[in-house]
Image: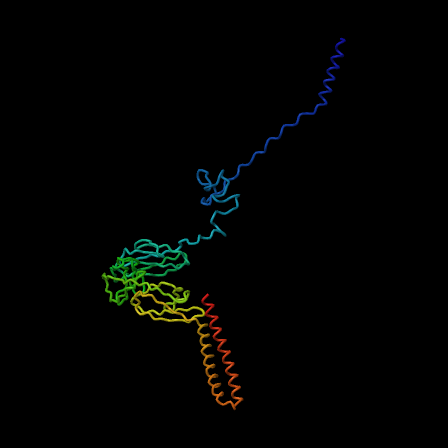
Length: 363
């Protein structure tokens, strides 16, 4: 019985300690369930639902993202601007091309499309050049300009033309007929061209043009062109550094080498500031060098001044000699002596200026 109060006291003490402890924290609340996002309706399904099998647009993940190229749900697809205008350069019109004879080659802006008959894609609002060609026939060239959705019709009636089988010495020459290029490099067969009177020109760098007028007939003809080499003509001047024009066109600065035809006549003009302008005519040059001697205009003027002063000196001297024969004419003698003095000074000044100019150029 004595131990009972002691046991009760211990229990009371333990009870007080337990009451002073803080209660444990409550458990955290369970996270709220996340609602499953709705799948975006496919633009191609009439009922607005996803296509069969539940797969959304290409590039979307988990059924919620936009199509490929769109980010954060707001950016449009790459390449679309201001509501999705058509790309520039898109073919949105056509031209149905036929030909007589059939099987002609069709080119659009120089690019091969195929044989006729054929539908040729066009770009609306743009001028494009259509060419229909067939060996041995005159090609048809037509400029087309279509509106969006247009379907044009081109019926090319190709007429038999004239062609030339051209050889040349040297080879690799170009051929024109009435100014139009028909063969880029010889030997070869030209494009067909309308029959009739034509001028054929065969050209190669460093050679005279071969020219031939002929009456071309429908079908093939042969032409052999022998070109004559041009000659090199050295053009020099004294002093050098003068500008050269050939038939009015700039040809360089002396010394210069020109490539000239042996069958032509040329006009050469050489100019230099402070020097005389010299012109020469070359008839059928043969390769001989051409030299131009220019005149110093300042020296020429100074020489003219000396000549003028010397003439005045001689005249004054003659007057003085006559006056000295009549000493009684004192006034005339004094005037002649004064004129002679002035003429002498003028002559000395002119000769001194000329000598100084020559000395300057000699340095």
